[in-house]
Amino acid sequence: MRQSKSLDPEENAAKLATKKLDDGNMKGAIRILCCDDKIAPFDDHTFLKLVEKHPKAASTPDVQNVPQATVNHHQTSSSEVLKTISSFPPGLAAGLDGLRPQILKDLTSPQAGIHGENLFKSITQLCDLMLEGLVPPSILPILYGGSLCAFTKKDGGIRPIAVGNTFRRITAKICSRQLYKSVGPALQPFQLGFGTKCGSEAAVHSTRTYLQENSGRQKIILKLDFKNAFNMIHRNKMLEVVF
Image 1 (cartoon, helix red, strand yellow):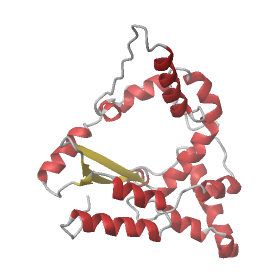
Image 2: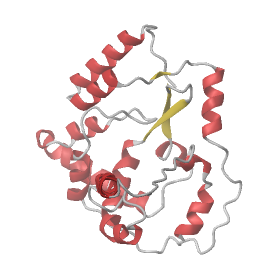
Image 3: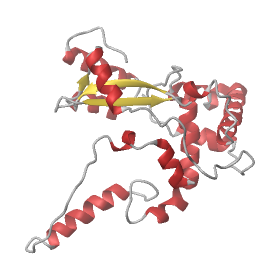
């Protein structure tokens, strides 16, 4: 976690918003100025709160029929990688390696010439290596890890924000794009957050329409929000469902 040197919350917000504007990220600047969340203190209390939200993983994943390295994986292309790099909005933060997406956008822009072409060809080879599962184990904690920042919420809780490695994010975007059309129909209508264009908006408008059309009837809508749901699910259980 990083803590700003200034102790004035308004001054911190102004500096962060200015930095977002310098990066061309207007939405990010507005979000900072309008958000009530503040950076959590850099102390033991914050650390313990973060540990509670990230329980230890199961010691030995019990997964059957794990795919072998011989299974065909998606082969990406330089044009696909370049399109993915260009899709990152301005002002995004970096992961543990300090490499921000904007840096890669600049280095692979047409102005970079042959050097830019050579770079995204090398990035393409790296993405294929990751998709094939051949990344050396010693690199995994850095390549698949992330930098963590903590914010205080209105109710006194902690909101952890993790920023992953840019190369990992590129590969994940490519993989998600390939699965988008095929996974969507399998998840509908129970899950609209992935694989359905404007799925979240559709859910909101459908719910609003349902309420309006049944305003005079005895109908109940129940909304559930599981506390820290994603982090409380052991990854081996998720793998068991997938495989």
